[in-house]
Image (cartoon, rainbow, N blue to C red; front, side):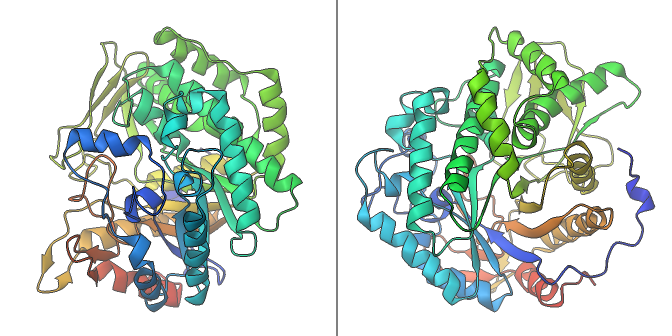
Amino acid sequence: MSVNPASVTNPPAQFPENFVFGGATAAYQVEGETRTHGKGKVAWDDFLEAQGRFSPDPASDFYNQYPVDLELCEEFGINGIRLSIAWSRIFPNGIGEINPEGVQFYHDLFAECHKHHVEPFVTLHHFDTPLPLFEKGDFLNRETIDAFVDFATFCFKEYADQVTYWFTFNEIWADASNTYIEGTFPGGVKAHLAEAFQCEHNMMLAHAKAVLAFHNGGFKGKIGVIQSLEFKYPLNENDPADIKAANNEHVLQNQFLLDATFRGDYAPDTLECANRLAAVSGGTIEILDEDLEIMREAALYNDYLGVNNYQCRFLKAYDGENDLHHNGTGEKGTGRWRVKGIGEHVNKPGVPTTDWDWIIYPEGLFDLLVYIKQRYPNYKQIFITENGMGYKDPYKDGFVDDQPRIDYIEQHLRWLLKAMEVGVNVGGYFLWSLQDQFSWTNGYNKRYGFFYVDFETQKRTPKASAYWYKHVAQTRRLD
């Protein structure tokens, strides 16, 4: 870091006129209707049913309630919405047969967005590979890469007149880590670092092929990818072992994917670390020369990067065996992440955490954005496509006072403005989430939204944070 955040004392008082103030959603987490209207299955359907803990139906019933949510967007100054297209709602089997009802649903949804002056930012894959492709290996199987590109190309053509802003994938790191490291996603295993890296590479190859299909097809609009990024700090800045632990996870989560995005290949220091970590789990990473040719070409045409950022990480050296426990209940202090060959997640004294053990350290967003600007000067623009705080929202007498969420958002927006002052080009901010939604591994008690959802009646209630955000969006100021 060559910029000292403490020296940036006077961030711009006002966001630019074209800055997007948005809210984020994902098809499986909001739509409901997961097995109706011609939609094909995804691995989550049977996985959640077997667990018996919670169901994605009706979630926020967005499939039927989207006009209500978009009207709320317009009322509360939210001029952008992240949406994802459920692949299996268009192609029930991932390839082949098309579901006309699913195709028409998204036409109607995008039309409603524009009716309410809310720009749709559309993601093509948000953790929901169609089941037949998932059962054949998901993105570890290169057939899925080609199937995804065909799906993406169909969407580019079908919705060309309604969608300007596209993202190929949401959080490639989360897909890889939750499936092959933490084991919390369907088919998940633990601490298979080689498979995690291979998944990351193959998904970035799929991204590159989709970007080239978009560019070569002459479609109007813009395209990019969303990465889940966290700045990594050694717990002891003077301990070489802690520094190495922080760098290990930095390469695994951040640098490997950002190299693939902006270079189209992997720098020598990235490859050295990736190959060393893959060997820890007894594997290797297959990266073909023809992959890199495609990725290098596509790197020229990334219009923006979506950054999902909720926290940073502090790491210390760890020499023991793998010890992983996901805090999916909000029982504070129960999460553990100790991975052989990488390091251990720890809390730094004095830094607060949420009930789900997520660190609240907004300076980490500043350091992350400046890192991207410095290492990848060819980046064009960044959108903060997810940021927010899971909270057990208190609902009382028709009102939700979620002041901790307001504090969290305000702190992150202030550090975002500081990054913009030192030259980081940021085009918008999307809160995760627009409304309360189903959470993949937490169910329904972990709420993120501006709008409180009674999941039995589907009634929406604006929270205190919604009124606060409306003021910020309308004035473009943090007063």
